[in-house]
Image 1 (cartoon, one colour):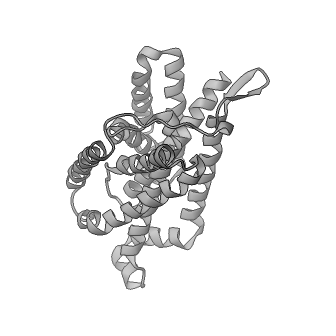
Image 2: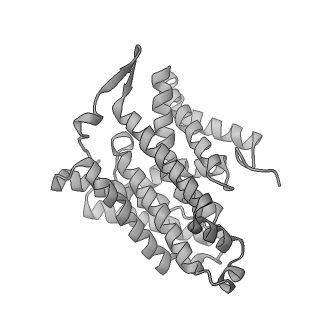
Length: 284
């Protein structure tokens, strides 16, 4: 039971890191970017290709897995996304879905349709024993790293100048500009941060989630479930939603392998019926 719980928590925390950028853009910036998974795929490919073709150690690839998607996200925000901020959500959805298929086609053309395989370093392989329970080292590594990322992001949004400027820009862009806040740069930095975190999540989860051109579509529903169940008023709700989904999915695969996917959607429906405003959201 403890092994299932640890595996579920590790999976849930990884989902949070992957989906938190979408939570920020939807909740704070009111922009629906369904192509968020494409940045996660980019980070995963950066790590996989550097390890398999250049022999770069796993940990050494992680900064680039964050930096390259962050730069691509900032460039996409400046050239593409900013044109759609004032457009209806349907326009944003259709546009970002188009970007997903372009990303899938590009990945298939450049790298091929095959699954990317990596070999984790020896210190991340195997299991450690706590009492009579064996826990995978890789899962514990994910829990530690993703917990640190979640805490750091929460502090950045609530205790730093960038977080204050972002909230001000979201609340009233016109007033924020009048006070000298460069709203465009704040939004670009936010997109870059969300894209970089998605890329880092894709790299960290290579061994657990796999990586192939269909990754953005395969996990798009999971990202949306995290945001929908957790709510968009902060990061605590999506964090709890990701943990709930991760534990439910892992337990379902162990105990009900034939209905694992159904169990996740059942949890989502129950959560939305009981808490339509999100797990920690306030009623309107």
